[in-house]
Length: 193
Image (cartoon, rainbow, N blue to C red; front, side, top):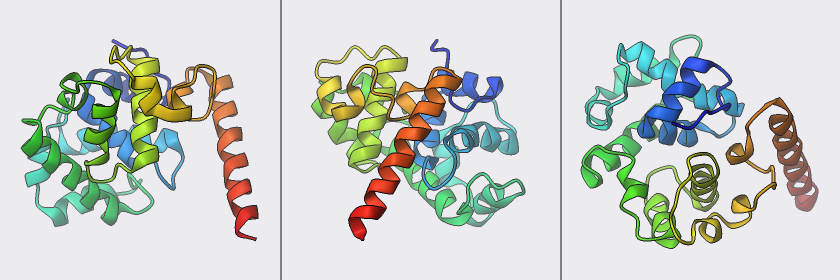
């Protein structure tokens, strides 16, 4: 089992290390909120559902209104609880229908890095960048032994890059990833003029 330092709370990080669906949901939630909060989200969701392990079909079949309320309960799981609850259910529906409810099959049944990238890109909420970061996370912290994973991860697959959640192993690396993200946002803002 990988020892993670992403959610920065042991029970949440332990869940991410053991539960592939939790890891995917954490990655899905990682937008417009601090990454620690995003990756703690699956643990909070499991607690609110009263389960130790998340189940894709159960989440996908959950009443949309009450599921959204689980996300919105204070403290909210995400800054945009309604839309992110909906995205989580859509992701879980895809995992339930296309991967027999086993999120790990997304990568364990992939032929190579390119195939994994295509599989991830087809999932609701996973665009190019999110797919690349997730591949890098699997490769760098979970020992993914899939030919071409570094190429599929793009710049995020480079060792020592400190650009994403894939590179966070301690407080120092977290600070450097935050610094990189801040710099990227500033450059994007400057480019818009």
